[in-house]
Image 1 (cartoon, rainbow, N blue to C red):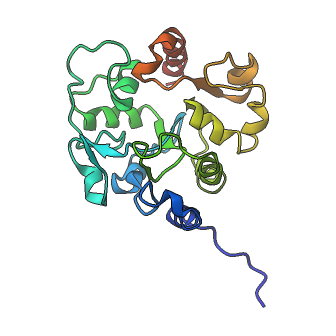
Image 2 (cartoon, one colour):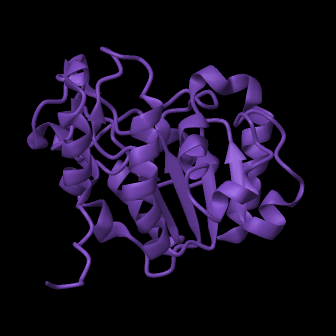
Length: 240
């Protein structure tokens, strides 16, 4: 009998296994639909990842329609970060944090491309990369909160090896789901032990010693934290 261990499961297999044991989430979680794969995120991975941003999960809709199949992830109205076909009003003057995740990040990083594709090129050229804590579609219109056990499974079995392979010089957690995910991954969990919520002031040595930055998700509902978000992104721009 061979003593070799079984190869690790793919991300799709991890989510399929999770969904199979939770019939109540049928139609809520789409384990086979991974927008980062459809949109070719790995092809934009820089050779040296200076800063890794960690978000929550891909959007569940394009316009007012739910995402159903892979081709939906390439629609020009699907606002997923890595969808370079998405077109928006990014060129207009916007109030801070008034756009989607990509537009808000590009603004905070002072990337001024003329299209989503150009900004993604500038993003990658600067040594930036972005991943989601949960990779598959989770329809938050049907269930607003991503289950804690899904975050845990995704962090341990999908995100942890991904971060290890990327070997980023600095990690920026955007929001509580990203924080919850990294609390499942060592050595980050130990470093983050004193952080309860993403909006709380982190330990003073978190960035200098562990190269971890915890920021509220840069969305319109977090404008009250704008000063903190902008201060964090100033530090990020200095790294690039």
